[in-house]
Amino acid sequence: MAVETPTKPTLADKIYDKMFHNYVWKSIFRTGYPNTPRNQMLVVATNVFLHLHPTRIHRTHVKITHTYCLGGLSFFMFLGLTVTGIMLMFYYVPSVDRAYLDIKNIQTNVQFGQLMRNMHRWMAHAMVILVFLHMMRVFYTGAYKPPREFNWVVGVILLVLTFLLSFTGYLLPWDQLAFWAITVGSEIAGSAPILGPKSRFWLLGGLQVGPDALIRFYTLHVIGLPLLAAIFMAVHFWRIRRDGGLARPL
Amino acid sequence: MATAVVARPVARPQARARDEEVLVWPDLVFVEFISAMVFTIALFILAVLVNAPLLDQANADVTPNPSKAPWYLLNLQELLLHMNPAMAGVIIPTIWLGILAAFPYFDRENEGQGVWFGTEGAVKITVVAGAVGIVGTVALILWDSGKLAFFLNEYLGISGGDTFRFLESVRNIQSQLPWPEWSKEITYLPFNLKILDSDARGGPTEFQNLDFPGWLVEQGIPIVAMVGLSSIMIYTLWKMGWVLTRRDALLALFSGFIGAYAILTVTGTAFRGQGQELVWPWELKVSEGIPGQE
Image (tube, rainbow over the protein chains, first blue to last red):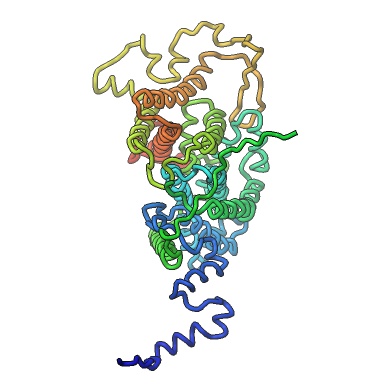
């Protein structure tokens, strides 16, 4: 019987070994390259970003037609909007004198400024649509049923927060579109019985859309609402795991 | 004293079927990565091709016609045209969000979860209720804008003459019927109820006498249209034997809402021109509101 002699490691093997089994790599990722089931589970469990996931998942749930990734994509839009939003914040000052000119400046003088603004705007629209479609997906797959009742409620809150995030951002370019859309929108809020005029005043910081409204919308848009949304998202994601992942038939 | 402890059915996470599972890395992470890339690239291309709109600097003295809210609020703006502003803009959306959030507390059965349209008859209920929402909303919008009467007269030659003028739109019921004077200023309401006059412009909220014809077209008929029609739909589906469980009732309600919501959003976005008149999308023009430039 022929005895298998160990083959000499090829150059690729040596490079692989040098890259993934060295001291620095191990200090960062702990596990080796995720090419064995053990390492693949470890990489999910030990990585702060990946550990939102379980290490294993029911095979029907990786089928794209089950979720169309709508919830994940909504979150991805949130991340993308944070990145592009921070870039826009470098150039934008929320004052009535400067806001409009700053947007013009971003579009004409800032390298990739127009692109960043476009990305921010289209991603915002995409997020509103994706969140709504995600709600429809959860409803039609019956995924709000026990034990996920409260996570559906958290989802409804996140839907409202998404609308508010988009609404507050709408004013910031300070052009005619922004100004009159917010005037109309805040009049809708102001029509509420008893509390309406007060809540409209509180939202705008005055009786009409002006400098106080701009700074309020800006503050809510860049810190207040994202923070709130992040907290509710943390609860939302945490509870998905606690409630046993995605819903599946009994 | 021993207190009886009643065991209640508490929902617990399902037991895992380990042999049915796949590894998250690579199976799920791959799908997530691809979908994120597809969206990034698609949005990048969109951002290269289409610029975000930027009009002239904000000017409180120049009102564009029509002035519109952001597109996802145009469903409410459309609703505002047909009824009392407080009801359309705040009360209905608030109540609806409350109903939406309460869905899982109304339908507590585990059946049919985790698969698309997992219960028997779910697809047909969804399709029919969605169609009812779409057709019903279109019909109501056309009726209230007087277009229904216009079409009947223009293309079918049907005219009710002056006798039926009050049926041409919802508000004609107020203006075209010989309401007696007393009905427009009812001072006495049962249980000493008062009517609140809500002022959309942020003015003071005042108590006023009940203008019954006004109340009827601004609140009465819209409430009947929304609550009544959806109830009739669910009741009919129940009588037909389609709606059997609470889940089925919610399917009908939610699908009807999606249909109506879509129509309201599309109408408000693409079919409302100057003065919020109904127009075809290709006739939609926005006047910048600058004098001499229409």
